[in-house]
Image (cartoon, rainbow, N blue to C red; front, top):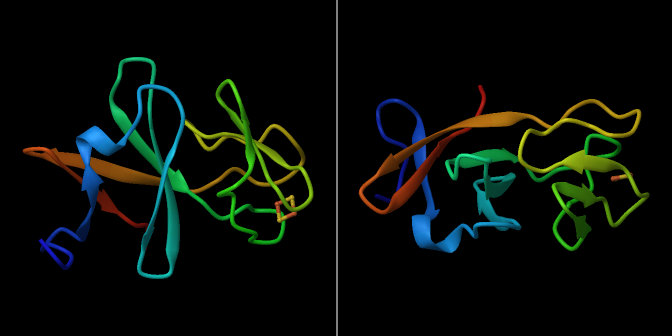
Amino acid sequence: MSAADNQGYRDACSTMQVPASGIYFTTLGAQEVMLSRDKAGDIVAVSGFCTHSMGRLEGGTVEGDVIICPHHGARFNFRTGRAMTSCPNLATFDVKIVGHRVLVRLGG
Ligand code: FES
């Protein structure tokens, strides 16, 4: 699958690329996406752009469920998108698994 399907889902990666703990970063169009797993092991997707000033979160320090933005230190739960500092929460995206592929629908 190379483009969005008729429900707007886009192919992001293989299920095997998303670690049991930690983050798999990818880019869908202009959107940076962080993929990880929730406590049940299901794959979840949130924006990889920091809501402080849209810096890329890739390269940030990971401590438990938290990623620390490498630009100015904002903190977010990378599984839920919840901000731990005064920034807005990260956008979350719908995920669907088809076979071994992870499909993500970006917000519109
Ligand atoms: S861009 Fe992330 S804290 Fe400033």
